[in-house]
Figure (cartoon, rainbow, N blue to C red):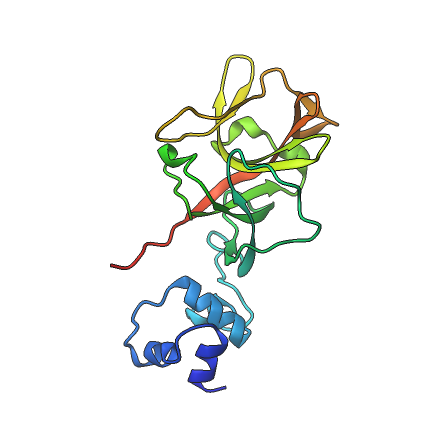
Length: 226
């Protein structure tokens, strides 16, 4: 394909690739490169010159091990309960890649959809990456600062998925929001019981289960242009 076709198929402006090659676009975003890599069937590492083969990733084991465009699986909102979809719904795509601190973890993308964690530095529209050990028995919630939590309420099977801070207490821990104004929404796990020996799931009340989906390892924020 020619440069115009590559740009259009990647969802970019018609001259985007031509401008990169000509040096007019001196610093294309990683999202732009990821879209091009998907179109050209190669890795971002190859486009950046960090890999010699089109399908190879960055060789350093201490940095990015894998990178790809992936679906954002949920919009995080406190107080919004809804039935889970029968099939996977995509809320857009973003870059998904692991982190050296979590080499044996699965990773997922979420987008923050409210202002419930503003005081902790998380803003509406931020895309966060979470990690969860492949072996769920290795997970210990209280060792992490920020986690994505699904609150399930029976008998109607309503789900609320939100970002929360882990706050340790004398006899357990809480999962709380951090709004700049108003009262935080607190889930107290001090007297909660483990759900079927799952270290990421707790029964906090009859008909109410808390499932920790993963802990935050990355936050991505788009800065609007002036």
